[in-house]
Length: 144
Figure 1 (cartoon, rainbow, N blue to C red):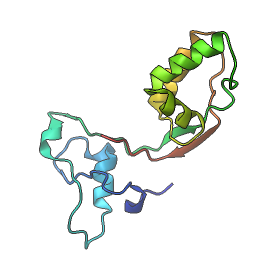
Figure 2 (cartoon, one colour; figure 1 turned 60 degrees about the vertical axis):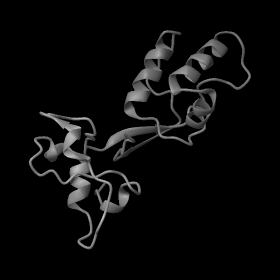
Figure 3 (cartoon, rainbow, N blue to C red; figure 1 turned 30 degrees about the horizontal axis):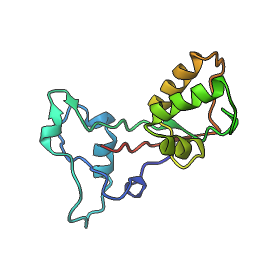
């Protein structure tokens, strides 16, 4: 997969801080280097985001494994322990509505979210490693 400027979401902050120690591994810096020559304005990362060798807006430029959907995980309308698990997933994803958007594949499930879901499911005896419907390897453009 080749990184291009057009892959980044509209108005996703990019970084032009050439003196940053993390620039070689930063997706925001890499996208900025691919910006069109006629670009006149764009959301940018300001120096205040950087504290020493840490940046609060850092995003790795390595492609990551994104999951989509969890429709095989729990049967709709099931009772007992599945209901407890489902309610825990509501909390993990922030709300019932968000859970169903992740479950139905409307939202990407980040590697960090995947780890949290799997760890939570293990508490209920889940033994597999892939409870999600689909996986893709792509660049991940996190929201601030």
